Image (cartoon, rainbow, N blue to C red; front, side, top):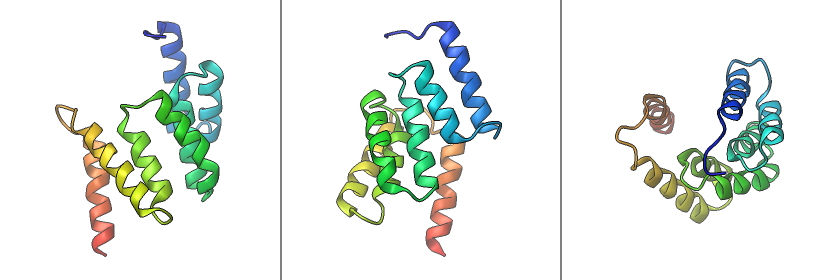
Length: 127
């Protein structure tokens, strides 16, 4: 669908908020988002991230790639794919990271929570 109906957008936002607030798990949020709209990539990204958090990198694959199909302009998808391949495929990690940064370059200003996350990553890498 080109434009999301308002009622669906509100329901997605409600499920997303419940996931962010810890009312439901990221896995449950992803499942509910896909149930609401199987073509919405955010649900697949949530399920992929949940698998990554659980240490199930291979289990994250199908969800992350489905998210990329449905959200090709979303930096978060590419950073999640990069996280999945960090230890196993340096070339794919580099490719996905580069795409993630490229997608961020389209923002007028990088969102503060992303900038802060990158600062923290740099601090962690510096030891």
